[in-house]
Length: 149
Image 1 (cartoon, rainbow, N blue to C red):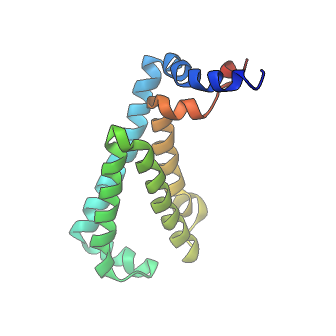
Image 2: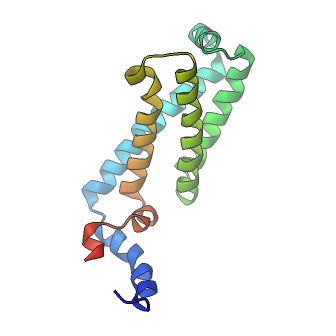
């Protein structure tokens, strides 16, 4: 590919990405996103309500229980940004940072790797995987082998 063809090739990438999105892929993306969103919504609401398990986990993780409502509100606000179609990519980026903090917290207290430390990574993978499957703008940024030939 010549240097002069590169801008035209890049400009055509979103159209190809949208064209390659299948109906099944779109619904799979919506399902992955919905699963992660439901988990995050439940987690955020529970933090707002501050039941006894939240009090216990905040103490175990070394955070003052008074931060639970703020953390829950932040989580729900970031989720709202993710769920709005125009800001979904920004929401995924912000939630990735939020989930990174959760990983850091679990590492700091010495929680088990697969069940606790990596759980936020699993949620992030669902968020990004779902977004990739349903969002042509994101697929356009990640060329497939088909686009390179």
